[in-house]
Image (tube, rainbow, N blue to C red):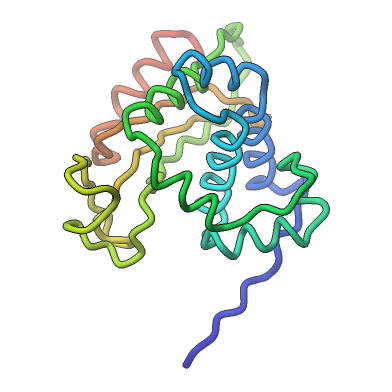
Length: 209
């Protein structure tokens, strides 16, 4: 039996991945996020947003939900970032995420992460564009015939590293100052090459690059 020991998550305000994580957690925990969730008639908004935060961080740092929850419960710095005072139970997060409606979650993320208007700049910038699969299902065996509630339809995607999954495809553009220039979420997880050209063209037409 091989046991893989993961290094503990230590929030670092200077690390690029943590800078992105802090920004995403800040947006998901914002008053605006609560308004968006309220308009979508989300039940128990606080737990809904907590579940989304944990889902994002577990994917970003490649942690199982149960392991991440355990780390949050025993790490004051992580607890502070998640703004939780009481102990989080992994089973509650699993239960919450198993009830997430695919379309409602997609609309929530699209409305929450709408691009803000940005002033045009003639200064030369370094632009980083990245794509990532955002997995939302809890089926660790990747069995495309057994997942979630019965008779519930899902859109499946395929990635060589993880197999079949239910989720989204994220494409993100940032500059050297970690400012978000563009952000799109695709619900059918298209190939990177299909997203890149149209994404860059939109950024050029908007004057952001």
